[in-house]
Length: 277
Image 1 (cartoon, helix red, strand yellow):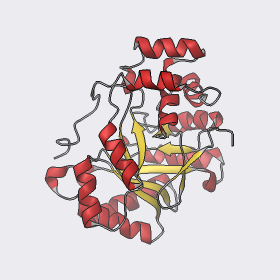
Image 2 (cartoon, rainbow, N blue to C red):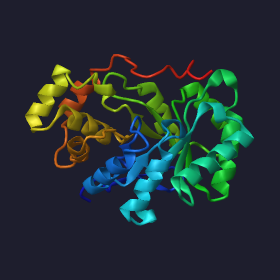
Image 3 (tube, rainbow, N blue to C red):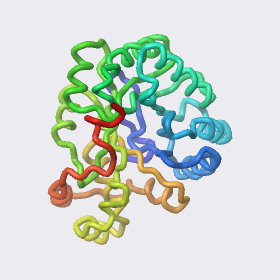
Image 4 (cartoon, helix red, strand yellow):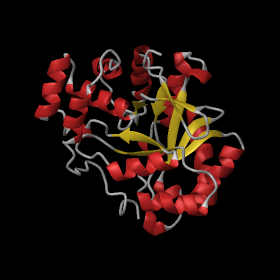
């Protein structure tokens, strides 16, 4: 079947998630509606937000204004660190659902493990209840390390459908991705372009020139070929469209290997072992 922006990955509970999504991090609540209309026009149907982004109301307004059937859309949001704990998770979820104006959320994630606080297992059990009640179609985590995932697997019932992690050519997280593959957890990449740090890399630039594509398009294509779900963010209409135009070419094995060799363990975001503790 021809690969398109509508192409999906099947999560471990059978739910289909569009492999390419649209991230709305740092897009203000009062402008995210317009950005979403540009994203929908480019073909995106997977939207990734979070309570801490402060734009769930605007995302909900954008979804409503689009007129798109709800079943065509895949909406992710995330629980913020200070809401971890059983009862506070249930309350925070209800608030997100209300702000988004939806009857159910497709994917709900624990945003950070905050391991020293010791609340993510209790939080996960609350999310298992929401899943069983049909308020969420799939539950997952974000920024969890191998040891955090091992704790969840040992102490709870539902295997996370997704772990959304910082992932780009300078931070390839091979050990974590291998753990995901072993346990049926989908890898989803945030900061897939390394917050711009990788855009000027000469290897990426050379590969992009060879295909007549931009460095960003090459990196998104790399993610897709690795089997990752990927959520590039932009509020610029031309870039939103460009980031969606990654299905008319492919990277041969030699170029994939060149990009694999760029890994340098470079984080652009916080360290999950300490952030939010």
